[in-house]
Image (cartoon, rainbow, N blue to C red):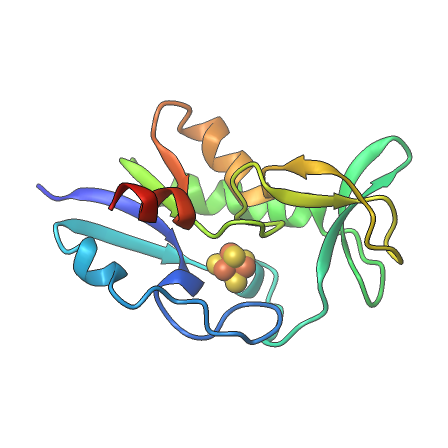
Length: 153
Ligand code: SF4
């Protein structure tokens, strides 16, 4: 039976990113030909956001880091967390994940936390919400950013 890999969909197909940029990796499908691929874009598929779309930013709100949509200041933290968890539970066991770096949904330890919604100053870095839920449900699988994956391949 093939091993199963969970992937940020923007790494496989154009175009899912908030700014509409194509960030797919040309030979990723070839590199993963021995795996069963499960691809998902949490922001488009779980939050029904369009491409392009306003940025989502991690910012402190009342002593908590929250995920806020830049244009209308909607707090999407819980919705994205809940839908991520539901999706991850629904797909069954995966063996590893390759997720898009720096994304507030898919980032692996490198999603930027901003000092405020209106500024670009950095407070720190953290996992994206989808990544965080994945690691909670599958604490023992390798979860790599595409940069880490490319270094190894
Ligand atoms: S990083 Fe994740 S949420 Fe952002 S476009 Fe890619 S798959 Fe979608």
